[in-house]
Image (cartoon, rainbow, N blue to C red):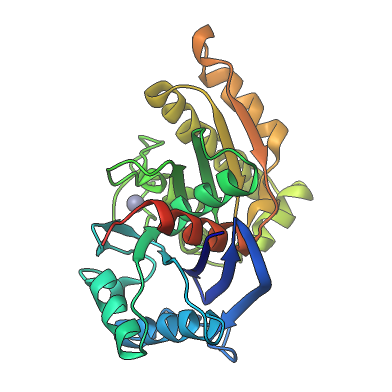
Length: 298
Ligand SMILES: [Zn+2]
């Protein structure tokens, strides 16, 4: 029976102990009294590392050991180094895996450690909790940023949130600075920049009430996600696509399906499956723990 700890960092750190693909004792948040308005964005990289190490240390049952620990973070992680992290810029260039490993050793913990992109951890969590470890899982996570995760892990940046989905020269709201990006339409920060006088939740509410400008945008939002999914289908083939994340309730699946139907016309590519999953932090936590057993990315 394998025992791991999974920790996921987004606007806060959420972690749990996992035994055989199942959470034991529920999820815990670290630090426990964080100010929700700013989250972790202003916390220096070194302190982020300490928060994660404390989380892992506190979840290992007294007198016991674990087989591996997995840490998931938003950004482009390659061989234990955070190459870029537009939504947590203090982590850019950090040797996250060796820093975490050293932090754990200072706490007397010597364990196999792996660091993943947070959306990849969600994909691993979906595979693990649905008995699909032998299948390909692709997932879009809709939250502050737009993540694209896949399981099994495959070498490459897989920065699906920065896929170009429009040629409109005015579409330049992406946090990475690139023009025409999916996240530049769907990302939280990008929506605030576009609608300077409205919060994203208000935009979606106004669209439902018939406000033309907001309704047009919500249509574009769905179109952009369909375009990114269609591009994925054309590159890697059909299969299972999941949609989840903090702001998943904004997604209307019939609208997404309609756009996809218009965008994917080659019959061998039409047997894709799309499914919405409610936002659930445990998916990424379980995924990080389970994937850490398989991958050694440090
Ligand atoms: Zn971008």
